[in-house]
Length: 99
Image 1: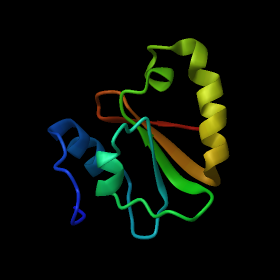
Image 2 (image 1 turned 90 degrees about the vertical axis):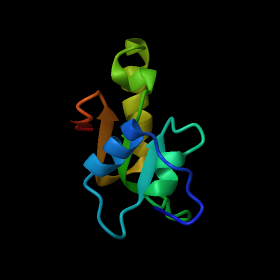
Image 3 (image 1 turned 30 degrees about the vertical axis):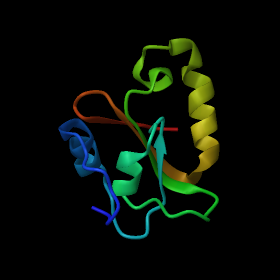
């Protein structure tokens, strides 16, 4: 945990723990509101593309707003490097979506 981080809920801690993180990865939290989980994985500003993205309770990705799904994937795909990965919290806790 970073020095100024807010403690994570058990659900977000499970998501963060399930991510395939390693030093040096650029991580994008989608729909993170205050960004507590992003701070936990030490989001590093300044690099244009991300290696990994994750989303927790984002309606466009978890089935609540299916009409937005394809547009959301296109936008996320533009934010990720060519071999970047997207993980969505589906309660298992994560599902990898191939872009």
